[in-house]
Image 1 (cartoon, rainbow, N blue to C red):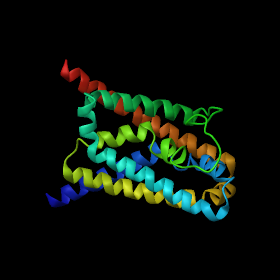
Image 2: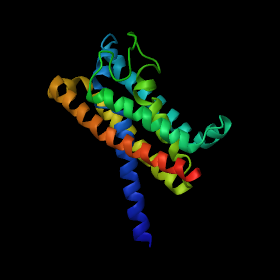
Image 3: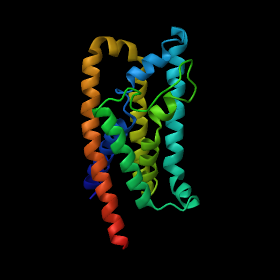
Image 4: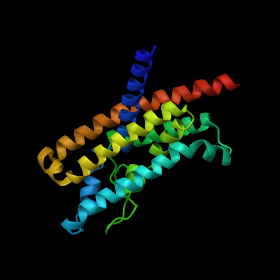
Length: 206
């Protein structure tokens, strides 16, 4: 039994890790980070990246632990949140596959960033917040697994964005675009699965 439990927790960790990685889309946000940080002096860029990633991580962590109380205060059902999150994920994934002139997250203002647009909505956007809110309904053990997965995703954020300029130069715009569209395709399938799951839960309540 412990072996099976460990296997389930490991699977849950990797599923959560992949989902959060797709939702926050660090590789797709490389051009955004590079362009927003371009006017900033090189000596400050790494500090800004660490700060923005930390803000996004803390915000997602708060939503993960207190999401259930947040839902209760707003009188929202978990089914509604699941369906709403799936719709947002679907819209974002479509923009990832079919690029929009304003980008995946819409227009952003220039200058030195603080919280907006890098921490929010680039990383801790509506889809990511809706996703971690869903995790808050799980048991304590499962939530801890999700926290570990979020921490692992946070490490990926740092690795990707601290080397954003080099990564963009090495891979080139075509490879980055192809990778983002591939991630969009995977996210589309996951959002549809989430939507169908929400609809099934809604039908059961009728």
